[in-house]
Length: 538
Ligand SMILES: Cc1cc2nc3c(=O)[nH]c(=O)nc-3n(C[C@H](O)[C@H](O)[C@H](O)COP(=O)(O)OP(=O)(O)OC[C@H]3O[C@@H](n4cnc5c(N)ncnc54)[C@H](O)[C@@H]3O)c2cc1C
Ligand SMILES: *[C@@H]1O[C@H](CO)[C@@H](O)[C@H](O)[C@H]1NC(C)=O
Ligand SMILES: *[C@@H]1O[C@H](CO)[C@@H](O)[C@H](O)[C@H]1NC(C)=O
Ligand SMILES: *[C@@H]1O[C@H](CO)[C@@H](O)[C@H](O)[C@H]1NC(C)=O
Ligand SMILES: *[C@@H]1O[C@H](CO)[C@@H](O)[C@H](O)[C@H]1NC(C)=O
Ligand SMILES: *[C@@H]1O[C@H](CO)[C@@H](O)[C@H](O)[C@H]1NC(C)=O
Ligand SMILES: *[C@@H]1O[C@H](CO)[C@@H](O)[C@H](O)[C@H]1NC(C)=O
Ligand SMILES: *[C@@H]1O[C@H](CO)[C@@H](O)[C@H](O)[C@H]1NC(C)=O
Ligand SMILES: *[C@@H]1O[C@H](CO)[C@@H](O)[C@H](O)[C@H]1NC(C)=O
Image (cartoon, rainbow, N blue to C red; front, side, top):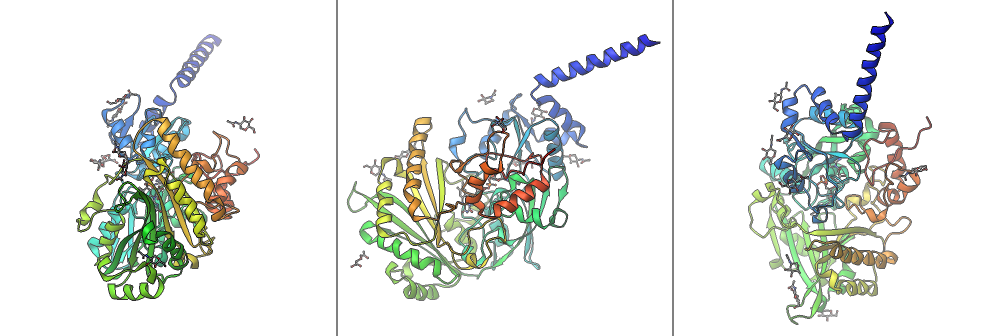
C-alpha cells in the first residue's frame, strides 16, 4: 500500500524539479506566455497584439523603434523588452499586469514614447512594454465641454478632434503634436495656454487606471489621493492609465500669433533681459516665450550671432494685442505685419513648428517633424538673470558642440501663480518667473559624439546654478533628467529618491511616497526615477 503512494510522491518530486529547472532556464519567457493564455478569455486577441524579441516577429523591431523619439535610445546596445503588447482594450492590460507580476517581469508603459531618457521602452531589468499607441479614441461632449481621451492619443489628435467639433473650445497642453497624452498629462503638460488655464493636469476631471492588482479604477474607486498623484506625479509609479477625462476650455474664435527674431546686433540681450521682467507679468491672455540659439549671422557671413525668437499667442485680435505690446513691451517693436489672426487650432500648428498655411490634418500624423539625438535639462528662474549672466550663456552657445543647442524660456505668472503649490504634485507655481528648457541636439550616432554633447549641456547646467532656483534646484518631471539621480537597481530608498524627488515635486514628494506606499507597497511599478514606497517592516 505504501509503494504506490511513494511512487506518486516520486513523480510529483520529479515534476517539481523539472518544472523549477525549466522555470530557472526559461527567463520568464514561456511562463509569461502561458500565463497570458490562461488569464485571457481571448487568447487569439492577445497573440494578435504580442510581439516577442525571441521569435523576432518581423514587426517587433519596427514597433519598438517607431515610437522612440530620441535617437540616443535606438542603438543596438539599448536594452530591449522581451515582449511588446500593443493593447487594444483594458482587459488585456489587466492580464499583462497580472502575468508580469507572477513571472517577475517589469512593466514599462509607453503612450507617445517621448520620454527624454527612454524610460517607457528601455530597462536593464527583464521587462515587457505595454504600448498604448492603438488605444487612442477621443470622444467629445460638446454640451458638457468635456472629453474622454485614451492614453495612446497624441495631443495633436486631441486638438484636431476638439477643433472638428468647435472653434471656441481648446485644451491647454503641449506644443509638440506627437506627444502622447499618457505620459504628458501624468507629468503635468503645458503649452501656450498655461498662463490662462494652467497645465493639462489642472484640467483633468477623471481617469481610468489599471492598478497593481489588475483592477480597473476610476476617480471614485481610486480615491482622491491616487487621482491627485497621477496628475503630475508621473503615471509610471502608480499603474497604467488608460484614459483621461478633460474639462475643455474656452478660446476665442480668433487668436493672434507672432514670431519675431532679434539677434545680438538687434539688441537680443537687452530684449531678453527686459522680457524677464515683462512676460511673467503680462495679462494672462498673452503668452510670449523666447527661444535662444546661436546662428550664422546673415549680415556678417560666417560670423556667429545669438538669435532670440519671440513666439506669442494672444487670446484676442490683432489691434488689442498691438495696444498691449506697445504699452508693456514697446522695445520689442511688434507691428501689425508681424501678427496673424488665426483659429486656435491653427495656432497649435504654429507652435508645433509647421510652416504657415499647412492643413490641420498634419496634427493626425504620428511622424515627428524631426528626429535627432538629444539631451535636455530644466531650470526655474525666480529672479531676472543679469545681463552679464546672459553673456556667459552666449559664450557657451558659441562652442562647437552647441551648433544645435537651444534654450526655451516659458513665462509663468497668470493662472500658474494662482494655483496652490500642493493642489497637484507639480509644485512650480507662484514665485517662478519662467522655466528654462536647456536642449542640445546632434545628428550622428556613437558614444563619443554623445559624450561631447552631453558634457556640454552639463557644463551649461553648472554655469546656470547661481541664476536659477535653489534649495532645491527645481526641475520639470516631463523633462526627465537622469543626471539628477536614479534609484538603485531593486533598492529604492527614500533618501536616494528624495534627491531628484524634491527637485521635481518639492514637498509634494512626501505625499507621493505615502500614496505609493498605500497603492503599490511592493514597488511593482518602478523605474530609474519612480516614487519609492516606504519600506514596511515585515
Ligand atoms: C519633441 C518633444 C516636445 C515636447 N513638448 C512638450 C511640451 O510642449 N510641453 C510639455 O509639457 N512637455 C513636452 N514634452 C515632454 C513630454 O511631455 C514628456 O516627454 C511626456 O512624458 C511624454 O509623454 P509620452 O506619452 O509621449 O511619453 P512616453 O515615453 O510614452 O511616457 C513617458 C513616461 O510616462 C509613462 N507613461 C506613459 N504612458 C503612461 C500611461 N498610460 N500610464 C502610466 N504611465 C505612463 C512612461 O512609462 C514614462 O515613464 C516634449 C517632449 C518631446 C520629445
Ligand atoms: C476577442 O478578440 C477579438 C479581436 O480583438 C474580438 O473581436 C472579440 O470580440 C473578442 N472576444 C471576446 C469574448 O472578448
Ligand atoms: C509573434 O510571435 C509569437 C510567438 O512567439 C506569436 O504568438 C505571436 O502571434 C506573433 N505576433 C505577431 C503579431 O505575429
Ligand atoms: C530581428 O530582426 C531584425 C530585422 O529583421 C534584425 O535587424 C535584428 O537583428 C533581429 N534581432 C534579433 C534579436 O534577432
Ligand atoms: C494599430 O495602429 C497601427 C498604426 O496606426 C495600425 O496600422 C494598426 O492597424 C492598428 N491595429 C489595430 C488592431 O487597430
Ligand atoms: C538697440 O538699443 C539701442 C540703445 O537702446 C538703440 O539706440 C538701438 O536703436 C537699438 N537697436 C535696434 C536694432 O533696435
Ligand atoms: C554656419 O557656418 C558654418 C561655417 O561656414 C557652416 O559649416 C554651417 O553649416 C553654417 N550653419 C548653418 C546653420 O547655416
Ligand atoms: C548634421 O548637422 C550639421 C550641422 O547642422 C549639418 O551640417 C549636417 O548636414 C547634418 N548631418 C546629417 C547627417 O544630417
Ligand atoms: C540593496 O540594499 C542592501 C541593504 O542596504 C545592500 O546590501 C545591497 O547591496 C543593495 N543592492 C543594490 C543592488 O544596491
